[in-house]
Image 1 (cartoon, rainbow, N blue to C red):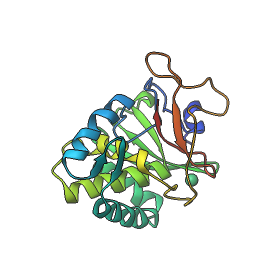
Image 2: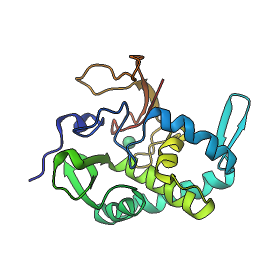
Image 3: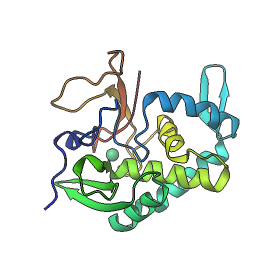
Image 4: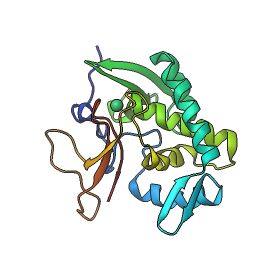
Length: 200
Ligand SMILES: [Zn+2]
């Protein structure tokens, strides 16, 4: 019987991680997300005008189609697809804890510190984005870019509920902060309480 690290149950980081953000394919930080945005604009994936940035329609359409395909997959098949785009993991397993499904990525060491527990909706969103980036661009840091694209999600890929911006952090822990102590906000599904991305 597997046990989720205590704080992954609230949708935050897996054990052994001190990054201010939800568990993701590449363990990306908020700083990575900002840096990768410029690459996404240059690759034509994101269109920027002034302060406003949105995924280009032709990218967005393919991403949504890929999300629909992946969410129909069995948990084991999703884990396989997720592993194929995760840069550092060597194994992936589908695990259910109560009503929460995870793709558990691991580095093969068997050490819980080498595991990342990714909520199913995050695995669907980021794997779909990484696959779409692979099909449409020659970007190299696709898993980090896929996480960066999560700021543009409107709906939960699994529940299809509109995401809300809330204070980042679990139900019972302290508010999450960045390295300078600024509190972070996060994009959260009100149904399954998955956190997709944290930002200042
Ligand atoms: Zn949801």
